[in-house]
Length: 246
Ligand code: SF4
Image (cartoon, rainbow, N blue to C red):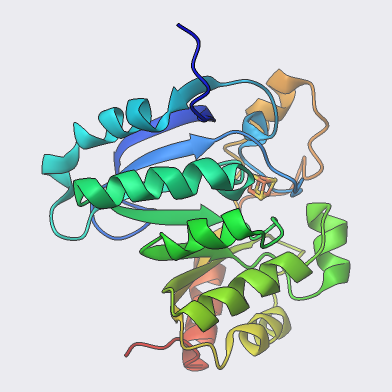
């Protein structure tokens, strides 16, 4: 029987991951992204038709894992860009709330703050926000979109007191200098909502996907980020004490 219940376009799932948010988490990856970051390791999530799920169907999948979540765990919605499907996300969060399961949103901040996007942010227990570069010029050059929606997302979380974890991928030769960290810190400083700021190492594990999809890989030949150098930059960032641990 045909129904008009809203559905989400889902790329894939990851059961019991520990990286994207606190505790043990069930990861759901949504299809669609307005950005085209040169270092994207999930180009297969950008467009297309994945699996369709209603709120009930998706909730059923997550609820099975509830016994594993413990006190801190839950579900992490990622992509692609999860907020492209914000109306569904807001409805799904309401359902998760009824089930007593916390939702973390993992977003690039690439989506305009519409009513639905705001509702989706309001329903999250934490927002993981990528801060990819420090100005519009670099965003346009390396991500194919501007910085304004990213800054708007951060300001909205600050206003609404939604806890934020910031993440930045560090790529050799692009943003691996102390002066880049200074610029990131200038943006984040003064935001009480920011509870963590993590630098991530660029890696080459997604390269084979570009080949498979027949898409030109803009960073072909770029090496993975050196771990020691990443640790140095992380210590440098930490020395700035911009994260609010209250
Ligand atoms: S925002 Fe994320 S999914 Fe979208 S292109 Fe950038 S890295 Fe890829």
